[in-house]
Length: 104
Image (cartoon, rainbow, N blue to C red):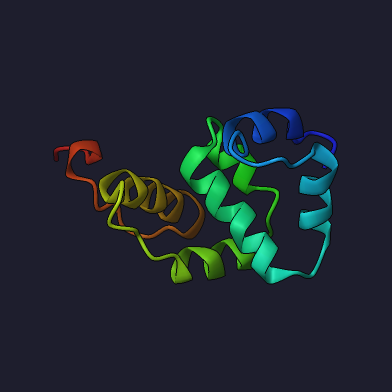
């Protein structure tokens, strides 16, 4: 975890909550799936280094959290794009964002 920039994660993802870098590290190290899922969703929607930050989770957790993530109505287009980009990168799922597809 030494290469993870917990300071940036805190700044990007937890500007609205009083949470420390140590708290984030403790969540990652814990077995508390509710808190881990909350952290995952905060990173998914707010991180400026999405792929790098999601790598703090193991691939099975990424798959589980992506599959269970429900795109909200508020900010839905943005959330859908971020989710799909993560699915493409980590799970080799199809890209569903037309503007990002290569024209063959």
